Amino acid sequence: MSLSAKLVSLATAVPPYVLSQSDVAAAANRGFGGRYDDFERIARVFKTSGIRQRHAVQSIDWYLAPLGWPERTSAYLEGACQLFVDAANNALDAAELEAAEVDTIVTISSTGVATPSLEARVAGRMGFRADVERVPVFGLGCAGGVSGFSIASRLALSRPGSIVLLVAVEVCTLAFRLDELTKANIVAKALFGDGAAACVLRAYDGGIATVEMSGQHTWPDTLDIMGWKIDPQGFGVIFDQAIPPFAQRHIAPAIAGILARTGLVLEDVDRFACHPGGSKVIAALELALSLEQGSLDHERAVLANYGNMSAPTALFVLERIIQAGLPSRTLLTAMGPGFTASCVSLARAA
Image 1 (cartoon, rainbow, N blue to C red):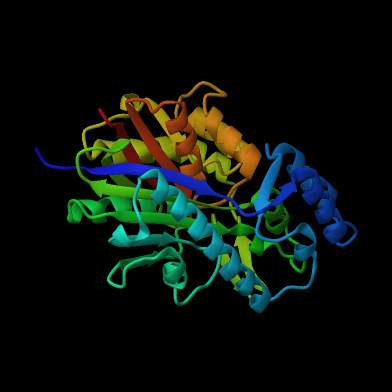
Image 2 (spheres, rainbow, N blue to C red):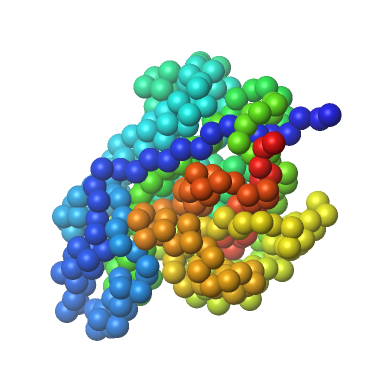
């Protein structure tokens, strides 16, 4: 019997500052009110987003100061490194492993620039071996946690018995900008939070779940749906098309096509574990996947308590599903810049 890649452990971490949605809305009003004619209409998103609070690497006043690349990069390196250490140690502790036992590290992050990359910067603090293999991945955005999971599982399967650590770290709040008077920028302030998730994967007998398959679907001519633009002051968010209606029209056929590659159909999935990009995105996914409205309850809970943290968010959802009791088959899925849908099918370990 051939081995499969297994999820051994999953853990999460958040930074220390808790931002209530009402406080962020008030700060946005101070920063944009009177400067942007359509602010009051767009600011309704702070109430309709389904978010109660988020976590951030800095206090709310820090974001109201003039900031450029040096300040944002410094905050990214400090905050992302600490989140990496916290999430990675939590996952290793849950797997009863030491950092020195890790053979490969897959690091997912698209919200800052770090060269050397994050896992190299924390190697001494963590205690990684000198011969550990490093696989830093940039640019996957909100799909990064799921795509990273797929990459890590294939690396684990390529060397049975080796230990692969996946860490998805995003510091989305560093994209908050006061100089950019756009709808996309204001919506980003209503949605984004910071956080990290880490997984240990290994091809062996055991674990929480078996990785059955993975796949992606990228729609042509959709580069403008989501992404970053590079400005003198920092990253600028791109939301040039409405994501909920796109998801409602296109996600089910894309996921069905991914599943079909291994002989599965949508009806074979017991639980979809979706990236909760926003309350409207969650509702659109329920409609598209023919789910009862309200059935993506863990997604709504993660969104309410943490906001959209980009790559790690789907893994926060998976953590809650595991804690509640993993069903026979769970499909972990997220959409991200490209525009791309990424999926990983997980079968509950016997």
